[in-house]
Structure formats: C-alpha cells, structure tokens
Length: 306
Image (cartoon, rainbow, N blue to C red):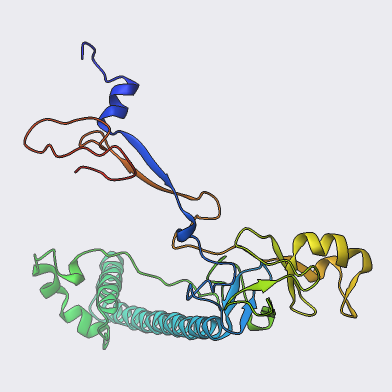
C-alpha cells in the first residue's frame, strides 16, 4: 500500500463502514393495520397520538400489563417485608448482645474493650446469617458458632463472600402504549370509523366528504367526537372553517393525525433504511478477496461475503 495506514477508499473497498438499503413499500404496513398484530385492524381504535390498534389486541395488551405490574408490586412488597423482618431480627439480636456484654462485664469481669468486641462480633455474624436467609435464634447461638465460622476458609461460600443486594425499585402501575411507549389508559382509546368505498374491495376506504380514496401515502386525521377518518386537507379546507361535521362540533383539540403504517423496524418513522455496520476485514462484496476464505463477490444490496 505504500503507507502506514489505509486510505479512506481502501477501507471502503475492504468493506469498512455502514451498508444501507432503503426499505421498499412491501416492508411498510398499511394505514389500516394494527400496530400489534400487523394485520388489518378489527374494530379499530386509536390512541391520542394516532396509533391504530385492533380493540381486542390492545385490550389484551393493557390487561397483561396490569397483571405484570401487580406481580412486580407483589415482589417489591415481599422484599420490603423481608427487609423489615431482617431489621427487626437484627434489632432483637443487638439487644440480646448488649445484655450478654453487660453480663460478661458485671459477672465475669470482662473489660470494656472485650465487651465491645463481643458485641461487634455478634453483630457481624448476625448480618451473615440474616443475609443467608437463616434465622438467628439468639446471640448465644451466634457466639457459639463464631469459632466455626472463622475456621471456614472456603471463600466461595455465600456466607463468606460479599454480595451486592439486588434491590427492586417500586414499580409504576401505569400502562404504556406498545407503539409509542407513552402512558395509555383504557379510557384514552378512541373508536375509529373508516368510510368504505362503494362496490370496492376489502380494506378500501375513502374520504367521507370528498370521496377520494385513501392510500398509504395519504395524510389522515381522526375526529375524536365522531371517530371519522378523513384527509388532512379535507379537514383544513372543509371542516375547520365550519367548526362542525355532520352536526357535531369539532375543535382543533378534537383532531389528531393518524400515524402511518408500521414495520418490523423500531425506527422506521425516522429513517426508512436497514443498516449493518461491520469492521475492517471480510469484505462487503465491493472488492475481490484472495486466500482460502475468499468467495464469490457481490456488487449489490446488503449481501455480505463472510
């Protein structure tokens, strides 16, 4: 190569960088598809942010979220109760240790340093036993096992190794929209009503005012008071000036834009491209390779010769 480092074009030829491919229309869902089932929505409803769902699918999803939140809350409450029990046991053991130290100091002539060491030892062993989920019957039993615990050299035993406590955070009881991740309640769902095309095929809908057919490229809005779906242009030119539709008052806050069809890609609304990044090494088909691992080259798409 005649240089210490690869040039930009040499890296590109070897396949370094990001290969992208724009998604075709077959990869994008229809405007009438449910965001959960990716099938035509049955009894369609939409969220305040304009995501369309089948009523049964979103209800099952919200119900399962509520059940999951209850399970998480029960686990958190059980952990809190266990921590409270451990604190109560620790307090009882500390109290018994203080009585034992007082007895040693007054009846056996133990020094203050010795009694303090005794209480610290009992407290340490109590923490080990409580962490090991065993019940400490009393300070005397802990003191009896003190020498045996010191003789144990197996550092891999749970009682001899420090462990980080896996503390659970108090779970939120809010249910979330599976499409946007925002908060969503059952009462927030809005019934959606499409106007079918007369003598048209299945899932062929049109604007209720202008009778123009919808396509996946159409910008659609939903009127909350009636649930009707129409073209955004129709709303701006025909409905908004009158402030009513079919005798029902419609304001700016009663109109929301229906989101376009989803895909299996999480970020499809931001960038309709599939990407793959790979390191310098096996090529992307943009340059021939030689050696035992060489294979036929590919000059198109995202096909990688690895």
